[in-house]
Image (cartoon, rainbow, N blue to C red):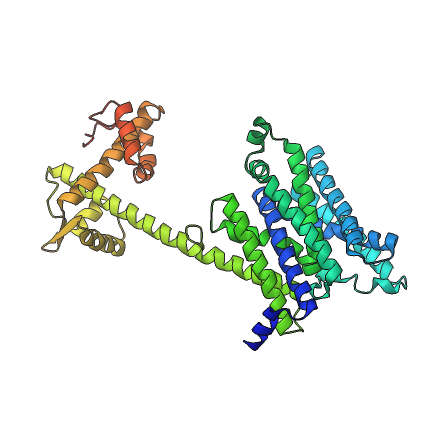
Length: 428
């Protein structure tokens, strides 16, 4: 607790520079990365991150200093050139995008390593620490770095806020955006430039190798929590900013721990947690939903088969044994027993001398499932011109998801039919 209080007192200017810098770099990268993620350009961040190294080295060779402004300009130029080459190679040749990305990434990174090695053997004392761009060194951020990175972060956030609607449109449907008069090519160019700028500013914190994770992971984590792009962008920024703050604290509490990798580890942990526990989209939630759906289908199929048995002997309320039900339609015995008990608890079935029979609610529910099944078979046969012998399997699936509204439309469209394609009565 004492360490936590000391950290958040911000009494040391170096702590302020590292913390604010890490938060700004993380959050701004996540905001831009949201649209890169939505456009399914996740690998682009990795390509840019590796392609900026030659620009950093060339900027140092030409200026002889590690001034962050010159390094950013150099990195931006080579990063932007790499994306332009990738787009042109993809559009004008038969090479696929992933292959083009791998090719450009390797070539640019190889050139960068070559230049970096040359600088390290040049004898220029100013080159000390330049290799930190490979793996990041957020703890080396100082006041002048913070000013430059703060300005870049503000530019990124302001540009995304200003063109949010247009960026959202081109991320989901560029053809629709073009029809609305949105300059799609200009917006693509803007997003490319923002992506490069975000990568360029972030590599000093986490390095070339880990920058792609900072660009894409927050967006991937946020996507599990919402379907709203605005909320997703905000959540990605919050998650990434928190990971930047946490990474700075870890490196403060344990000086041997590097800030950049810890930022990536924390945002990765947040993403992994989101993958499991997020409502609706999380793995656990989806597993629960699938189990509920499987139970619903099992219950409705069971009620439907009881209705079929009732049709055969014209007594829907007759009690049925397990063997009678299985003879009508095979169900695994353990699942059948579980479904029967569940339907009894829900008031759809009653038990009589060890056998099972409909309640009034159960009979109505089973009757509706049969009705939907036969209506859909008739629709496929009459309007889709599918042979009656081939409509059963499709109806077996669709009968469980037809809404009351669609049910009414089917009845009206088919003019309230009495018989299905197999000459079986449609119950109302």
